[in-house]
Image (tube, rainbow, N blue to C red; front, side, top):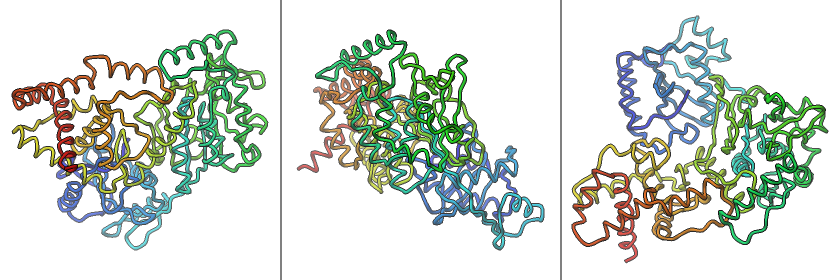
Length: 571
């Protein structure tokens, strides 16, 4: 179930409520008037993202089940309280009273508020008064208020060297003085969980930026002067050979790393709930361990067991049983985090190779999910440079959920970015109409294939700009203004970028596909650029390709428009 702001392009969804809308409580006098207020607000919501955690003032929120809008609400966040001014249910909705309360309490948690207040227009029946009281609400006149008891948890996913991304997420929350009551992890996430309790984020960043594979595994990475695909393949081959000959590579060096960077005395005395997930080897059964229920001398063993990526790594023996990586059964333990009492969960998925369980959280449980669209590098080969990039990426992508930063693949810092990108889009569309007397329609789905996510009408200019950024191989690990980003695109588009940090096989193959395969998106883009630059009737070429390949044609023309604009400004 999804709760998010409605966008301007979704205003047509309100028509389903005009005749068939209803609600439990007296929150409006006339349905048509309330819907008119909602529609007026939705038409202002020209949003690039729909996070309920980053905007204040009156907003219209939609509640979706399998992409079906079954309830909308007019809300307002004031300081630490979420005010509900109205809520309208679709006629076919079978929402129970408890589900209704739970969903608004989830919305309150995900918005970053702690208080929830229903603003009623008149008094309610004794039956509904009792229902509110049963759910812990007190009335202040005709309004009903509750201060929620929020237990904050974080579920850290497995993914080996990619786990550095989670340090960036931690860094953002640490800056906000945000404390977690429950900390759970799988595989590298289990090690990060212990680090979060026993050390500082500065210490954690230092560890990850200095870390090398030999400090985690009893394996010497073959020396290489350059980061190349053949060198990566050699390392993987030697790692596999060592794994086979030793029935898994030992993780003994990890004990020394923990001794160096973890304050174990602080870890053992924590009052936070700490959980790790591992798998019992012979039955392949998930084992979720609440460490406070185990002897403290076993805690480090359980954390290492959670990350024992068998058969590449040796299984970990604890007492009479052998345990392996928890990712084989539960790579991001949000269910265990909730079981240990968390009702607002930060979920950090670093795209490890394990199984992500299908988990349905209670309606009242809030969930902030962080998963990067970038692939974050290798799993078993640790590299300080790549770790530093992933840490910064995790930090920036977390910041986007809560502050006036925008973007999907990249991070834009302009507070007024939504206005700036819309202005750029309008200028570009006017340029197309004036120069070529043609603007395309219905190409968002084609754009989505390159963008790797669904593109709402409001996101089209952002998607086009970020795709050009990817074509130019702009790094995502630093924030940009719209000016600096477009400048980098123009500067880097025709350069061949070499990898300066460790990359995965998939990233290497993606680079070769981009550079060498004629039908890659980048090569098609470049061929159209070249064709448009030739002598002859360019307008006819644009008209032809606008019908056949509108997404590529528009990207080329946007790039040309940016070049022309840059030249005008330079002059």
